[in-house]
Length: 79
Image (tube, rainbow, N blue to C red; front, side, top):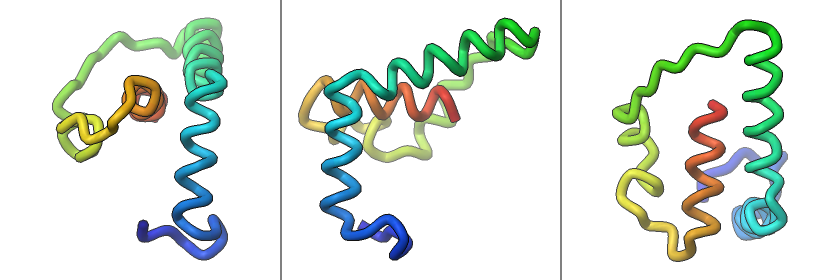
């Protein structure tokens, strides 16, 4: 809920996040980033699940739908 003013009201930002989760935008972005990193030889398969603890939503599964949860995992993984 604590967003910079340039993002508009938090509810609108949340709705945009959900819409992009439903239409597969986050998965497509993650897949494109993965392909780009692989093509450039920058792909490193270090998995650090502990960083997920810093994101309260995915770490504790607060998201009520599988779509929102999966979107958060894609965004976190791309990060």
